[in-house]
Image (cartoon, rainbow, N blue to C red; front, side, top):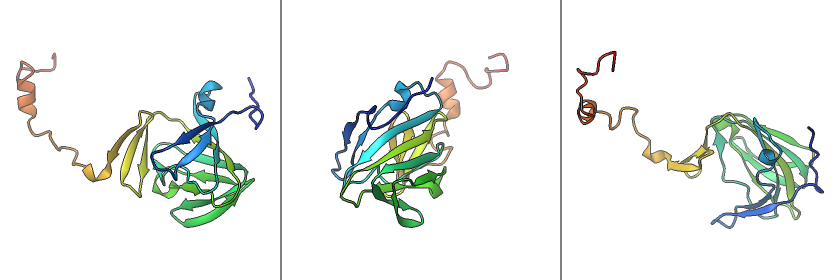
Length: 173
C-alpha cells in the first residue's frame, strides 16, 4: 500500500526539552503508524533560533535528512555548513556521521528525517560524553566506562551461592 505524505496529511506535535534551545515539531510515530518495519522516519520542523537534537552520532543506524523547505546550519566533524530546500544529507555510522542542526534563519526549516532500524542502537553525544541505548532510551556517561572484566573476579563465589561449585557443574549441567 502507498501512503502520500505532505503538508496537508501530516500533523505535528511540539517536543520541548528541559533545555529551551532544543525544541522542534515532529510527526512523532509516523513510520510506525504507517506500518514501516525496517525504517524510521518523521517530518520535523525546526523553528528559527532553535537546535535539533544535541550533537550526536549512531553506532548502528544511518540517517538521512531531506530538506523540504527553509534552511539551517549543519554541524558535522568537518565544521559548519548551510543547507537548504532540496538538499539531501547522509550521515553514516560512527563518529564521522556526527550531526546537529541550528535554524539560523527567520523561517522554519522542515525536513524529512529517515533512519535505518536494525534493532538496538547506541547513540553517542560527543559534547556531553553520554551514551544512549535506543530504543530503550537508557543514558549513561562515557566517563563511567570500565574494563570488560570489571567486577568479574568472584566467579567461584557467585557459583557457590547458586548451590553448587564450579567443579560440580559438568557438561550435563
